[in-house]
Image 1 (cartoon, rainbow, N blue to C red):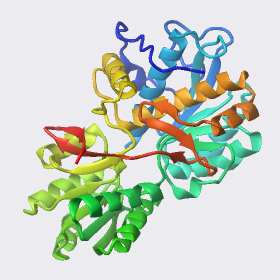
Image 2: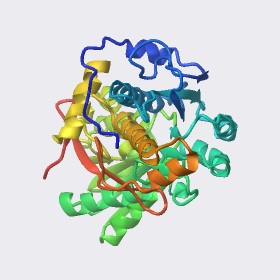
Image 3: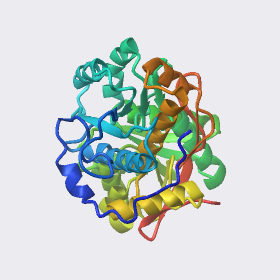
Length: 389
């Protein structure tokens, strides 16, 4: 079994930011993917990694890459898997669903790849999943949350929670702990935003609350004036935002600029330090949920944060932590299987129970979904802090 905890990274002076900027469309062997030095050792095991690594929405993919690189570095420093180093076969999907099947076929055709990590967008994962299923190549995803992926393939798993679960849990938390009854809902117009908003709204109403307004917005929107006006006219007790940090940061700022001090809650798409950078002091008091918090006091989490900060000179995001955990889950499965045979590795992943990840205990249900608990956080003094009350 692969054990997390060696953290042999503190003395490495690695230029991580520069490494991320030189990602190629396909970097076979992963020269910057976590080896202790130089090129990949002969007989290394390449893990596929595909995500959106360029363009406006590259941040999630690059953050996941950081977590993967750190995990591989640690695993290799501890002797690797089955006595072999791990590397990565990295492919930028550019956030385009049309690229999903093409990339899936490329990774399927590489018989040396026993598993794939990724993705940034559910639409890309969904488009490629039939190919992965056909060739039996297991996928452990870290950021795609669409309920459509639940049970869609017997080789698909994820360390992130589904939209349906997260939206419902957020509504329960707000109803039970914040006394909120009337909520204005804003969400980005895509599978992620709508999935979260629908689950949130359904649970709010089931708890006896009311959704005063529900409005969709397009990614890339800058001016939310009319949207904010409509939300506030409904006299809500709070506002819920289901979307990525870029738009969430603008919405929060414009709500505050409108003179409203209403409590604001947001989905895990806003659980990024970049949200705080964008919203500035307006981010203070905003509450979000995620699978991970850098302020989690558990030994696994604090050790990861220490190693990550030493390597990258910043705290890890939830996406980095989830991808780090996914890498360890795959490594553990290969070790348990005793081979890189895809069917054996997929079966070992499927049997994962109570794996002690940095984002908490990890198990998978019959549909490949993660079983576990969300972490609720509040922005305090410019950082996300775990909510304990």
